[in-house]
Image (tube, rainbow, N blue to C red; front, top):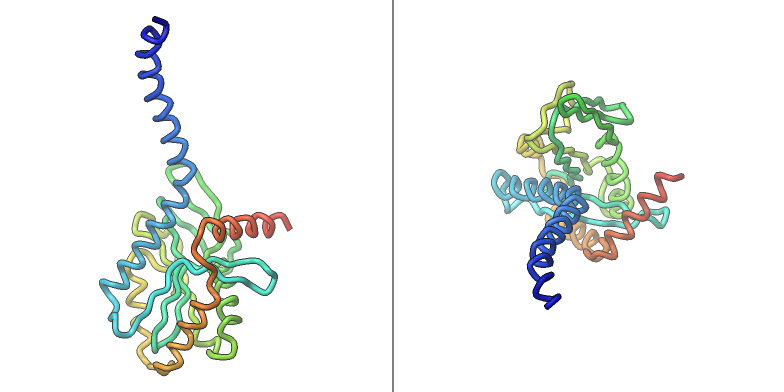
Length: 217
């Protein structure tokens, strides 16, 4: 009898509870999903605008650094014309920033948010990759690129290697002189694939913990 009385209530509140859980999970994973959407867009740009015979894209590469920590590179683009370290940012609103500024600003209506200069962020990625390839590749052939998604609008003059949408592919194609022979390019790819940490929840968790430790220091 009691079960019959409470069954309709449980049915109603059960769905409400599941809805709250779903909303909480979406909020928790929203930054991760936004990041993955940006990374997916860059992968699509490569397929659409760059010659597959000349470019090899490595995605989501977590590499150990010399401080026993890790660095997570969104994309590494290998080509005969150079190696490109690509950082993606999936931000909306107005973006303000300069090459030498430590923090950049995102503004959505009347709210402003600070975030780390992505060029500085990518500089560490570039240095870690230089160390991994130290005995194979001249560091001058490793280039930094930052790609924002088209939902944002730049409100300050951006450095020449910061782009919105697919415009970054034109920058890549401006490097037209072959400087890395095919055999060396294959060695570079094999070296990175050997050093990169396995893609797993454990690797992501370790990287997040390393970031927290770094920010406290």
